[in-house]
Structures are given as structure tokens and as C-alpha cells.
Length: 341
Length: 164
View (tube, each protein chain N blue to C red):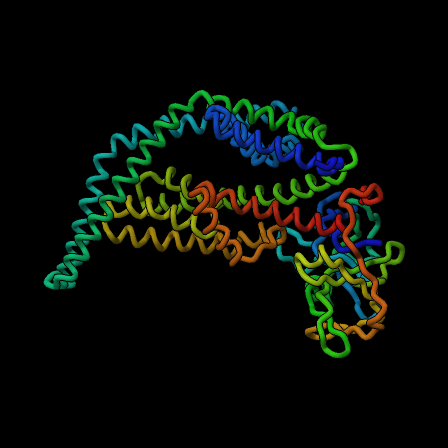
């Protein structure tokens, strides 16, 4: 075998190490859990970093104090949400069957009005349809329960997340400096420039998303409150969180609101739909372009394609994460384009 | 020599320290081959987004200017990616970058790219701006086709490149 030169040896070594890491990752489940917990903490810390910086700058408090404060606030809100939602959902869960009955009555009413029930095709269609919906609902509730159980299993890892996020928030720069030690010296400056550019653009994206989500949440709460829909706070929070998914988030967020509105009758549901359309239009036409346009120079069609891919790969989480990932890739391409020439 | 990427994304402040925006674009006079100023993107769609070159007090990673004014003319983002044709109508490439002299902000040349991935293989061509004419839909290059200035990709981590 002819002697391998230095470059080939380096490539083979890197490939071997990567392969080893991937192997360990798949073989040992606990490594995966640790990795997921670390990733989650990193994402939380990165999202909160601009807020932390803003507050530290405006109030001149110590950075550690601000970080601890923000994280404990979020942890408290999270726990409070769970403590309020679960008992409420359990007490109202009897109403779910009410909702489904109302829906069925509604459909039967519509059928009678339209007088199509004589046609055999229509009865077959509607029975198929209702069977599908039944299966969908039972499958979905099974998945929710499975998710809750998995959540409980990982409770230790999840208790760690706030603490790790705190350390990422306060000592993130130190950690990234240490990380640079893995990279050979002559490459370090360029990689650092890459990192700075990615950080700049991602930071703007995150800040823009946070502002948008806040605006959507407030608007949803106001609308739901005035329309006298039950659980306005929860619907508003849900919609605010789902707003990070471009285009589809509003649709997904509207579904529970419509279902709860149907309890009070179809008129309310129509009002809810109108309200959501108004909210979505205000947000996407007036506010979002102002907040986001200069930074995310990705064409909307591309974003839709990315969302579809993201949904296939990772479901809801995939849809949320794929736009930032695409942004990072775009920045990397442009930087390589710059540095290579 | 500045490229567009060097000038983009710098913060713009006024004399009192208030942040006015971020550089998004540059305003050019193609005929006189000069950069007239920088265009910012601020939070509100403001007509006053133009930093005249004469109004700039300090120029570095952050730019301090006296005031923002309105601008009418061509911004680089409008002519980016225009096709560049030679005298017989064949496409030489797409306008990608402008090379700006760092002393007097005159435009010395333009960079054309041949494709998103091809450019890493074939390199980019640099054309002198006085040998081009800006049109409505294309740019005409009437210089000598046999003399080609090429910008070839090199090792990503050259030491000389590490200063921005």
C-alpha cells in the first residue's frame, strides 16, 4: 500500500472520529437524551440572549442576575401553566365529548338541510368521513398521552435544562472560546468570522420572531377575550408559540380555538375564523415585513418548500427549526463565496 | 479595495449616538463610476435612508453620519444579477459584486459570476467598469474579450485574508 500523505491521513482520521461519534449516538440511548437536553438548553439560551443583553444594557444590572431572573421567570411560567392547564383540561375533558356531539349534531343538521342524505353516495361518504375523524382523534389523543408519559420519564433531564441554559447564557462566550481550541490555529480566525456572521443573522431572526410572537399572542388574547371564548390565555399562548412556523402556524393555532368556539355555537366559530384571519393579515402584511425583511432574504416560495421538507423530516419541531437552519446555511454559502475569492 | 460584502451590515449612528439603521445597500452613479453613498435599512419604512458620502463623519465597523437624506437613483440591489452581454449578445455572466476603491470610493471594476456552483470551479471574471454600459435589462461589455481578469478560488484559510 503506498504511503498516505498528511492530508489523506487527516481526512481518514476525521471520518473515523465522526463515524465513531455517530455509532455511539445511535447505540446508547442515554447519550441521545443528554444530547437532546443540551441542544434544547442551547436553543433556549440562544433565544433568550438578545433579551438578556437588552435588559442588561438598559438597567445596568449584573449579567448573571438578569440571566437567572429571566430563566426563573420562564421556569415559573412553565410550571404554572402545567399546574393550571392539566386540572382544567381534566375537569373540562367531559366537555370534549360534548364538543364532538355538537359537531355531529351540526353535521346532521347540515345534512338534513341539504337533503342529500337520500343519496347513497353521500351516506357512504359521510360515514367514512366520521370514521376517519374518530380514528384521527383517538390516534391523536394516544400520541398526546404517550408524549406526556415520555415527558414524565425525562423529568430529570428536563430539570437540568434551565440550569444548563443559565450557564449557556452567562458563560456562552467562554464556552465558544474553549471550543475554538479544537480548530487548528490557521483556520481559527476565518471560522470565527463565520461564527460572527451566523450569530448576527440568527440573532436578528430570533429577535424578530420573538417580537412577532409577542404581538400575535397579545392580539389573539384581546380578540378571544372580546369574543368571550373560553381559555383565552391558553389559546393566545398557543398561537403565539406556533407563530414561529411561517404560514402554517396560524392555521394550526386556529384549530383548537375553532373547536372550543363551536361549543357556543357555529356563529362563534365563524367569528373566531374571521378574527384569526384579521390577526394573521395584520401580522404578516404590516408587522412581519418591517421586522424581518432585511435579514431573511429567502424567497417566500423557498420558505414554503423548506417548511414541507421540515415537516417530513421532523414534524412540528422540524418545521420550526428548518428556517433558522436554512438561514445559517445561506450565510455559510455567502461567507464561503466571500472568503474563497 | 472594498467589496459590497465589506460595506453591508455595518451599523449607522448619528452624532448623538442614536442608532439609525444598518447598511443594506449602496447607491451608485454608474455613469460616473462613483459610489454616492450608503443606504440603510431602518425599522420603519423610511424615505430618509440615504447616507451621503459627504455626510459621513467616521467610517469603520460602525459608521457615524450627520443625517439621513432621501435618495433618488440606482441602488446596487437593483442591478445585482443583471446579465452581462458581450457585443455579439452572448452572456458572459451575472453581475455579482462591485469593486470599490477604499480611498475615494470610485468604482474600479465589477465581478461577474457564472453560476452558483460553477463559480467555484471556473472562478469569477472581473471586468473594468469603463468597458461596460449599464442598460435597462442588461449590461453591455465592449472591452477586449481576449484579455480576461479572473478571480480564482483559493485556499479558504490564507493568512493574508484573515484581516477583514
